[in-house]
Length: 517
Picture 1 (cartoon, rainbow, N blue to C red):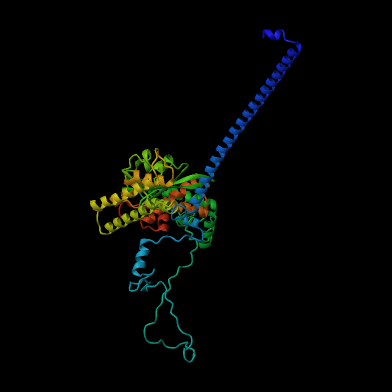
Picture 2: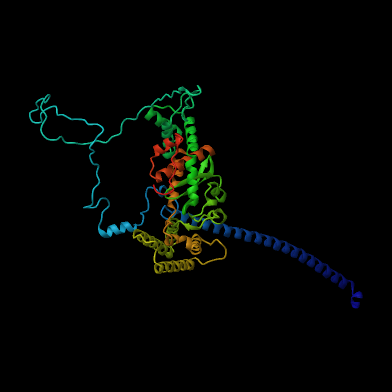
């Protein structure tokens, strides 16, 4: 460095030029590095954005894959492997699997219908017909001579009877006159009271009330069509508003019978429970039902869960076995006094059919065959008036059940938590954890195989909605279902519908019997 101080000017200039060149090079390199750093940051940001897009694309692809799988699964569903109604199967329906009864008939060579040699059924002539019409020929069958005034032939006449209905009667106009009597002891004049159905100067009687409610509640005719039917059959011009008032009046009249139905359901040994959606004033409500072979009670609530079930009035005091479709609201505090639960195996058969046909899991087919085999053994034992199946047979059937459940777990590995990854997994879990409720029909012959009793009753609610539409008010819905409960119970116990309704409007409603028809 010391030598550089005394260097010639040319050398110093050269060195200074080198310094400037190096400074410029360093500045260029610094700017280049800053540019590269900015580009690297931009690339990193772009990479992060692309990775985020890729992650979203993967998520969307997975979502689309699940949607495609779900749509494919739904396409394979029908009324045989799901809760879809048969009307949704379309005109080209999938052929149903042959039932055991059909297979047995085919093996025996039996054709459907009346079998050769079996006793026929026919209408026999009655000895006291309501009307006799004597038929006389007008001309001779050989020479065509006039037979007017000819003598009767020998032998008994040939007889044929035609059973027909008489033309609809018109309205019977009954006038009630309240007469007064004078007491012979005190001289007080007392007038007779009019019957309950004759409060106004002109009123419709119990028979017409019963006919109107019969058409609307039992056969689901809308009010306008019911009005037309009453006019066509009886010549009665009844407005739709009057018809609505008749249904409401019928709901009040059947109150004692509905209260008795509720009381008997609470103490029944086995009760079917279910619910279905309906519409009140355009909004979704829920129709809840409880029934036995002899009783039916229907109600309505805004909610489907425990609150709606409790609104029916049966659940909190139910002491018997509750049969339902495993809806979570039926467990726990909803039925605090129930002696046990049983699950509907019709639901299980449909779900097993879905798992077998849609997911291709063979264990489901084996479980279906086992459940149907159990049902056949139970029915055979009941036909033979046995109180229960033998313990060895029960143990063998339950062992086979457990083996199939284990196969189901192998096909759908268990995971922690309540819900499984798939519908087959959830079904296996239910069949495993609720095996006592699934197989209760096998140990207790009072418990049926399915929950069809209440489902048949609630199906009428859906039929009403298809024909007449939903209800316009909560009061109208409650009135309809109370009368429907009364009529359904009366029909189960062998009562005539018109007679039961007429008795109710005469303020003497029919009450359900606790035992016997």
